[in-house]
View 1 (cartoon, helix red, strand yellow):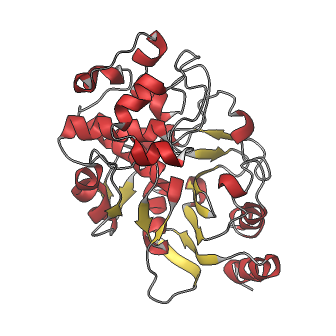
View 2: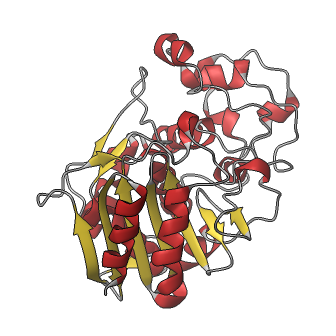
Amino acid sequence: MTLIRKFMEDVEKNDFFIIGAQIRKDNVVVDEWTRFSAKPRFETYSVAKTYVGVAAGIALEEGLITMDECVANSFPEANFDVTNENALSITVRDLLTMTSGLSETMIWRDGYERKHEQDWVRYFYTRGKFDNKPGTTFLYNNVNPYILGCLIEKKSGQNIREYLRYRLFEPIGINNVEWTSCPKGHTIAANALQINIDEMGQFGQLLANGGEYNGKRIVSEKYVREMMTPFGLDTGEFIPSDPPVGAGYGYQMWIDSVNDAAYMWGIFGQYCVVLPKKNAVVSVISLEKTDGGSNGAYETSPLRKVIWDDLVSQI
């Protein structure tokens, strides 16, 4: 029995709604199951965060940004009326590691404000509660990757979709990218990226390969290693502890130190698990309401447990 077949048996037992599951090993798809033969794209929610994490690595190499620059300095047109030194000292590194000093997750938890607020960058700086010094506390949120995406757009003069088109997407086989923008035209870099199961696996393979795809260097190996290394701060309630024990956070990726893996995780069952030492990738796209979000828990997920038990730990 193949790993995917065993996985799908357990999926059926638990009545999970899976769109597709795929295993890649040594740059080749070795096992998969898909609900639709055409493999349509679906919203993958917070999986998008890792794409902007890679975008930051590319921008660093190109000299557009630096790890320790103060991000607020790049947005003078927002006319900030901010005196909080914590807010004004947030760096690229802080955004990458979800340590901007926020003490609440802010926007995208309130549908009314998301609908009516036009300038999300200004909102971040003027309405955010920055009770902590940047770099000292972890708070998983959607605002940090959004601001990071805005910074890259500002420095490059392109939206994230276009910036990554020839640098990332097309070289790994992702064409005509669908990624939603905010009212100001900035890419919603925290989520809203639509991809299919093949495209998810191809992106995971890039990271498993240390930043190379089909022999082409996309992002530096050193940066990819840093992405998949926990930065050491307590991730608190957002550690997905069942499984895996020993989780943490890197640059826009969750870390599973038990299985030597790093993974992207979007609500409702979107997973791309990268296992560099095995040169393997496990990808799952779902519409599973029990996995994360307002209808489920961050700490436990029946679907995640099946993915880890049947696939991740067995490769």
